[in-house]
Image 1: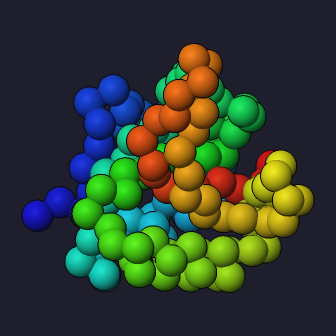
Image 2 (image 1 turned 90 degrees about the horizontal axis):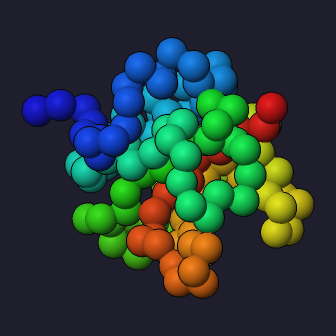
Length: 125
């Protein structure tokens, strides 16, 4: 069994261009998923995507993961764990100006609709 899966369009060569703190956070997320027995699927690294509100993905400071297979309790556990443990390297949220290493959200698309709910890992520059 592999540690993680990915969407077809995710280029694993992009791992070489991630911010060092992002690479460590990504590894921690993958290992925590495996420890908890939950699926771990990378849905975006540095790919361009509609509705992005910052350059964090392009700059190698963010990654998205599917939340499919996670219960509400699992999601809450991940948010608490990652936002507490990695507060010192977390990006500052534009919404409330608090450091958040992990966000669970549905991104708003240019047409006004919303994409699938997912995890967004992020580190500060």
